Length: 338
Image 1 (cartoon, helix red, strand yellow):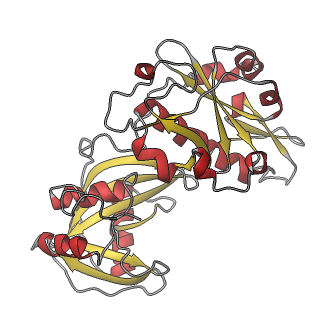
Image 2 (image 1 turned 90 degrees about the horizontal axis):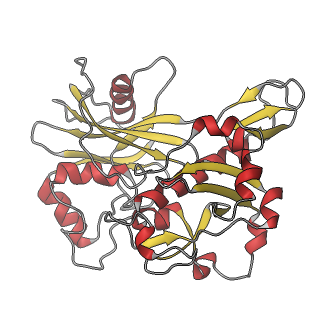
């Protein structure tokens, strides 16, 4: 594969790449910053229960803020986070200083046990949605808050013990560091880079794959984690060769987005190949196939194939190749995503 320089980002306004807060990283170092923020009624708090936060239609003002003040000036503004003032119980919860907006308002995430909100009903009935459910419908500020808060909450849940000595760790620096209680070593949130790529043959057909454990009809572009000592472009070439036995010729950068399920960042590419013979790794792939644009449209219209969800860069990569949105292909209301 020829070496390829990374070009400017092509895919704009990716659903989970729209954070608008200033993360005020230096402010996190102040030992009492969370106490100060949770003592300030102007602080806006978002509560995280498991992998859910509470949302409401964007026209409402559940936090007392006029609807027009929600940075809801982009396409994804059908929902808004339910934000509230701090309450006394927040001081005993895991707190996360998420940043400040342009007028200086601070935003804090607090992690509460799922059981605290157990009513015996589906949480969605009370507006508690996952990022997969709500992310595409949130405006930039709220999408960024939810994405960051979920990524940090996931990291805290899986790093309660020191990886060096096994002793308990506790959060410091406003929820952005965990410190070992025995040796004092500090541990930082991890992000695992993964490449995700369209592969297109000389006839401009797209390569689609179905994961080994995916149901019939669920297809996406290929993806895989970057290995130590590996460039992004080399990871693209290796993953394609491993999963389907195809050698790519060129790789071009398309964009990237956080993917906190639980702790990844997806780096998107488009790759070309002169080879079309597929040798599938059965451990990774149930099947793979080449499709033309017209074949893909027909598969969508017939319901034979489902695309990745709207918050995923995978869907945007497919649409970039297709030259139109998936929704424009099928009748309104037809389910297309997974």
